[in-house]
Amino acid sequence: MSRIVVIGGTGYAGSAVVAEAASRGHEVTAFSRSVPSVRVPAVTYVQGDAADEAALASVVSGADVVVGALAPRGELAGTAFRDAYRTIGRLADAAGARLYVVGGFSSLRPAPGAPRFVEDLNHAPAAFHDEIVAAAALITDELPASPPSLDWVFVSPAGGFGAHAPGERRGEYRVGDDVALTPDGGGAISGMDYATGLLDLIETGDHHRAHLNLAY
Image (cartoon, rainbow, N blue to C red; front, side, top):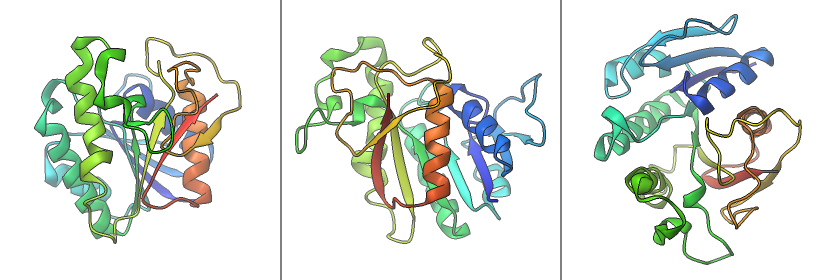
């Protein structure tokens, strides 16, 4: 079993990943700004700020896998989001831990070699444009520029993924590369099935410095 740290472990995607990892017997630590009133048994919850390097270092040290499930909003809006992931990547690299990042649909492409959806934001409400651009910058700029020693995988969900459409566990999913399996943005995968797919990717460990997507 692996020691898995989920940064943003109480958000929509993060909490699903925490629950799935714990159900498989992994040693799980959930790091977030707040601690939930209802906790997953056997999970260690640590309250802290993702902008605090010392706090991050205290949980990343000794980890086998780090899952980044942060959202680029609130205190992590704009450059703070990218700064936090630079720190997380550096700490994971120093710890020899693999880094898995919960991405967004707009970082994908509609076809091989085509521009990413983020390059034309007409598909998304204007209120979300800044968040979309910040999240996509991790795969367009930050992660590819990281040291070769950092083993990362950026995993985008299908369009429509989020707490507003939680869905149910179907026990199925498909895995694609950086080309969206559902280019029209449909086929939103539930948080539970996304977490199942992510944990399967972690446990098989077949992908390295790669952009993948999960969809029904």
